[in-house]
Amino acid sequence: MSEYNSVEKTQILQKYRELDQRGRIVAEYVWVDGTGNLRSKGRTLKKKITSIDQLPEWNFDGSSTNQAPGHDSDVYLKPVAFYPDPFRLGDNIVVLASCYNNDGTPNKFNHRHEAAKLFQAHKDEDIWFGLEQEYTLFDQYDNVYGWPKGGFPAPQGPYYCGVGTGKVHARDVIEAHYRACLYAGIEISGINAEVMPSQWEFQVGPCTGIDMGDQLWMARYFLHRVAEEFGVKISFHPKPLKGEWNGAGCHTNVSTKNMRAPGGMKYIENAIERLSKRHADHIKLYGSDNEQRLTGRHETASMTSFSSGVANRGASIRIPRSVAKEGFGYFEDRRPASNIDPYLVTGIMCETVCGAIENADMSKEFDREFS
Image 1 (cartoon, rainbow, N blue to C red):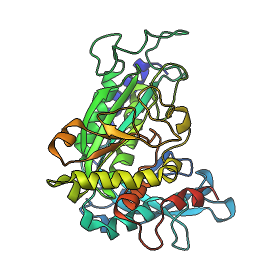
Image 2: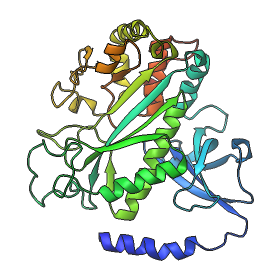
Image 3: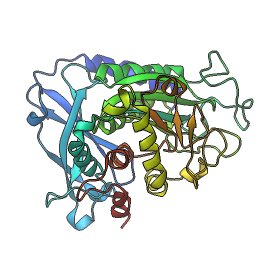
């Protein structure tokens, strides 16, 4: 399908979007499947939704999503958040749902369940997160979007926060996604073109506790949906192209109530000390194929050793220069890959920085998923 035809069909669809829905609304249920990708399906509801309790539970065929065996395939969707739908508009909504087995236990790919327990136990810490989601654009034939056919663009240098033809690609996709997130109430705090051409970043946050994972998953869903209309594919692979090109990460900014107060630097330093002792546990949850990215080159730290520093983009943990100067604020964990499950990353961060609770151990979530 050509880019022209994709846009043309969207224009045709618009006249149907304007039809009266006769008092009904459409709720698009979205969930994370067994491969770390997103799935969704829609249903009709009889009235406008104003609270999460009004949303019914639903189910789907987990044998088709790598979440259940064929002989016991029903997986249940429990709504956890909902947002205005930027595609259907009106009173229509997009519903984020968590997956549960028929005995009421969380599906093994439902990492939200354990993370929520940790955040509830440490709610007095008032932990804030900001996630910097990098991603790469491909065309329908799996070529990096906008790159010369059969060749490569000029080396990295002019593309980061670039402006102008030949320096940035598909700004229309990025702008459409930005507006969709704003409409839906996502705490999207910015966008920029990244170091590798056709690689972009959006930032979500600050968000408190479990809301961070919810909002990042929903922002990713909106990105895929927007890209559909432009005939573009989205990749969250941490090293989408071999060679002298930057990988893609999801840098994680962290701040507790004590870190944000005057004198907070001692709490930041204490958190970094704790993180240094659990480097291997964190790396295990920081995304698949991350070893291809964390090489100590291209603005990354080594995967096998922990480091920290002020304004050091080659360290595991970076303390911003302004934070070091003021003596309070936040720190940035630069290790997470672009394809992380944000519930795993924010959960283990809370566990390490704030302390574990009984029967909650995010490092075991990885083992549970792959057992």
